Amino acid sequence: MNRKDVALIGVGGHGRWNLRQFRLFEERGWVRIRAVADPFRSQMPEAEAELKAAGVRWYEDYRELLACEKGLGVVCISTPIALHYEMVRDALRATDAWVLVEKPAVPAIQQLRELIALDSNERVRVGFQSVHSRFVQTLKGWITCGALGRVRRVITSSAWPRDDAYYQRAPWAGRMMLGGRLVFDGPMTNALAHSLHNALYLTAPGERVFGEPSSVSAVFGRAREMEGHDFVWLRAQVGEAELHLAYAHCVSACVPFTLRVEGERGAAWICDHGETLGNDVGLPVPTKSDEEDKDAIYYSLLREEVAPTRLRDVLAYTTLTNAAYLSAGGVVEIPGVYSAEGCMVGPGVEEYIAAFARNCLPPHKAGLEWACPGREVDARAITHFAPVLNEPRLV
Image 1 (cartoon, helix red, strand yellow):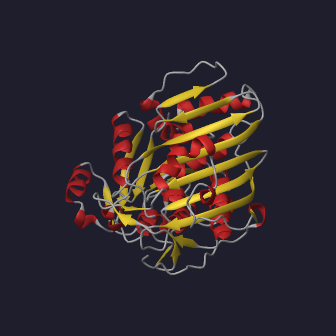
Image 2: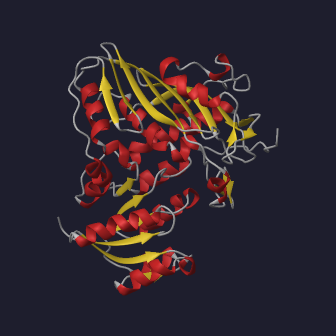
């Protein structure tokens, strides 16, 4: 592996994790961290001192970094969602480097298609690293070799409680727009985006292929006073399979994610936050390697391998999330109540999510009367996403 010079744009928040990962690779002799860009240097004195001692240059403006640092091998972008589009665009135009951008790549389909056209030699990788995990790849292999038969249905569900501090940690949290830029923050489009990306990967039988969403019906809800959503349900036709999804933050306790694939010959599942892989057709289950899972997307990028995290690989994810919002027509209000832990909780939501993997009923048929699905939309016809915000109000 040829050593690559790396620049990181954003070293706060999740950027700290990416910085630690590249420091590890630097110790192994695979990369050299040459520069970082972050306007909040004064808020990170320890990171500044550490990087300065290592001879790493710090820029306030990422555009200055791109203009001054020539010959970079990798540019890693770990910034708020609303900034991804312009930063990836600028990195592709200014450098010949490989670009790693945190998930989700961009909020809107028109932004993604523009970047795909610009990324003609596929230098961009999106931080959907869990698609590389041994369990996801094993389940994909079972589907590809036909062990489960034709996939009929994929079900994905999870609930992670989020308190006041979560929504107060950044000005974009829980927002649809910020400063004229799209954010589209919520469980499906941020915290649980990995689960949806993996589900779409498992709807298609081919290797490194994602299913194409067509008809989509969805409902978005919010128990908290905000622009975005903290509950989402959708049903979609994706290739030959049905996709059923239910995610929420408006709960008091965690419901570990479940990803269930049902085929003509049997079913397989990943559950317990990715720690358990099982099936009912007698297939052998491998041992999981956390270290391998954690490093996989970086290994792929540094080795310049083709991986299922290219910009065109997230077309299905972006198309589906945009179609779901357009189907819902906005976000409905949930009569939420505060828990002792500071979470806004939607009555009945936690129980609904916990039962979803077994029955995947639409929410209005399971007692959540406020959650009536929106109209069906054809995701293949969507070329532009510009949501019309409905003002939030307290219930």
